[in-house]
Image (cartoon, rainbow, N blue to C red; front, side, top):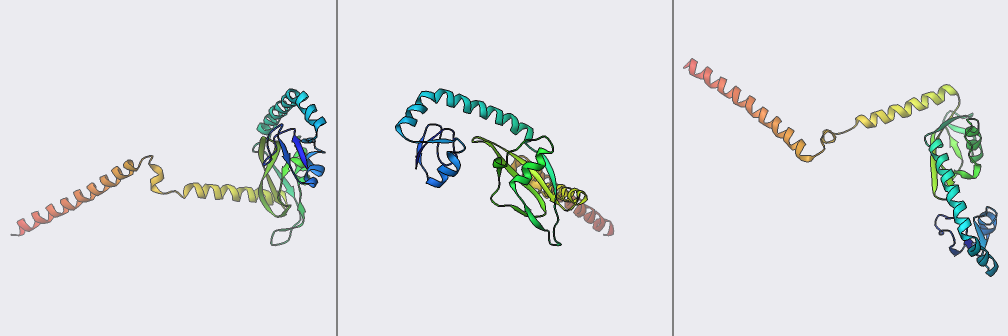
Length: 211
């Protein structure tokens, strides 16, 4: 089906672009969500007549989404679920569940804004992408655990892992430039040579005294 985009759609195009998509994608997603119009003469004329208004509305929606993204970025929530010994959930966590748990914090996220390739089926901490606008995204953290205590332990475990990774750095990381490192190594080598010379001199003095 040939359509006219009413907003930027990833991998398709920008506002006003006329593109061809599969009929099901257009009927089930683009058209009902008012992201596009069927491309025919009447709709093309309609779009051109309202282009400035459509672009202004999109810009306003983008600005609102950016404000929401600032509020949401870094937000986190705990979802308590039953699970087996191996950590597999008795059920799963869906986009609707994630939307609901953040609503409890007065953070409104539409189920359709939650980007998930598949439902969550294991305990753990997950970074979830939110598509707030065609050009605006945010990331929130979801901690799926059997209890509040377990959620806290998982969070501490994640922090400990991050700290361990931060400590796992080589000596080169302490120096901004390679020549700084070389200078330190040269100083160390010079110090070793000085120690060796001192030992040699003391040994010579001892030999002369013995003679």
